[in-house]
Amino acid sequence: MGQFREVRSGRRVFQKLYITLMLWFVGRAIVAASKVDEDVKREFEALPDGLTFSLGVLPSGPRMVVRKEVGGKVRYLGQGKGETIDLDMTIKHMQAFFMIFSFQESTPTANARARLYVDGGVPEACAVVRVLDIVQVYLLPKFIAKLAVKRYPCWSWSRHLLGRSKVYLRTVTGI
Image (cartoon, rainbow, N blue to C red; front, side, top):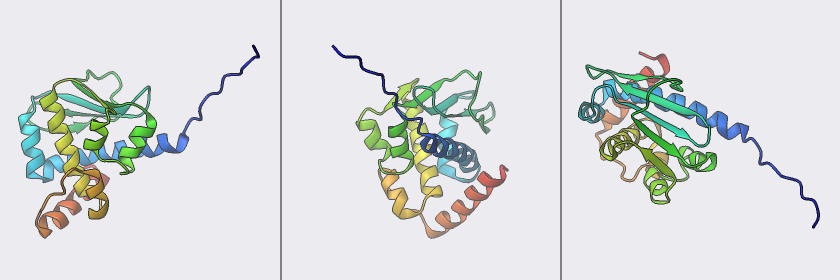
């Protein structure tokens, strides 16, 4: 038999950079939405105090970590190095994560195709996915958000406009 050389796949620098930036922005937007939106507040109230959840990509890709602190405050912890994770939501690989966060595939579709691993409580994971859906509706224009979420909500015009403005302002400024 002949000799074969091992071929390694590319590093996908653009995808990793895009996903890192998206996770940073979404992590901060979750905190902003927890201060602005009543539905997000309600979802976080149902979660136990001290819950730390993570959303990332295998094998060692970017990750965002968010914690609900005692008293109901929500904090974005960045990559969360050294943090104890109570709920770890991980996407199988970089390409699947890129499809979800470039809105080519919705979160429910990715879940149905077994691209999302959850290590932790299922009720908490469902609450986090609902929060992510609300945040995506705030961050994205309607024609893109319809691709990202299972059901686009029927909100009032003022909720869309004012809520979106507040979420964007708080996300960018960090207040």
